[in-house]
Image 1: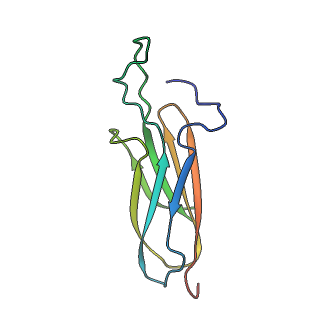
Image 2: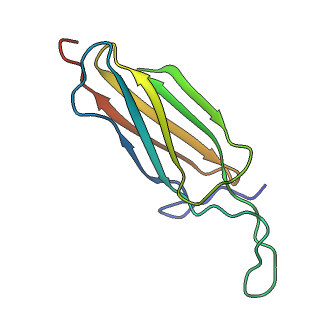
Length: 119
């Protein structure tokens, strides 16, 4: 495995976590996670003919106020800049956070505040 990126903006650091502005208690909603990630399959070559190492997002974790609500392990790369939609139920206001890791050891995270009326 290669060393993690040390650039100012490593792969997978730009993301959006989209949730509704205001929810009712017990309301189902879709949390959408969009991650800018270059994804490399491991089958392409650079200009010099050298194979580019594979680098895809391996794991995505969603937590609500620290409690695990979703964990996904990616086995095959589908596309660069992956998108994930997860159906959740709002019970109270709090913080929804997403964390991910790619094969090169780059990690990223983002969070969004959920507002539930009366809670």
